[in-house]
Amino acid sequence: MCIGIPMRVLEVSGTLAICVSDGAEDRREVDVSLVEAVSPGDWLLVFLGAARRVLEADEALRIGDALRAMAMAAEGGAVDAGLFADLEQGEPRLPPHLEAARKAGASTG
Image (cartoon, rainbow, N blue to C red; front, top):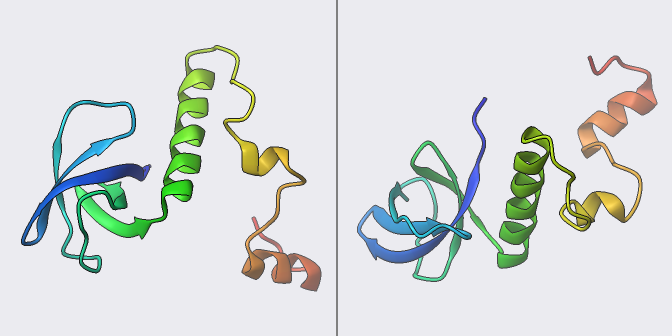
């Protein structure tokens, strides 16, 4: 399984950017050839060293929170309240195409 990591752009040179993930100090080189032009301060969703999507800062924060919650759970600890804020605000929702299939009676599994 591949998990996307939100990373903030520090520097850009051609199709490469130097980025850091939230809370980490190590800098990583990221291929940005698959996304539109980026600038220092932008947030990217990074898979295996390549940016797949430019993120808004609030979305990067939510993804980072969810990843921290997963790490806490994997270590056997309690998950801090608020790390899954989008799920705590109501019932989980299916993506629109799966909700349409569910309503039509199609199997999703």
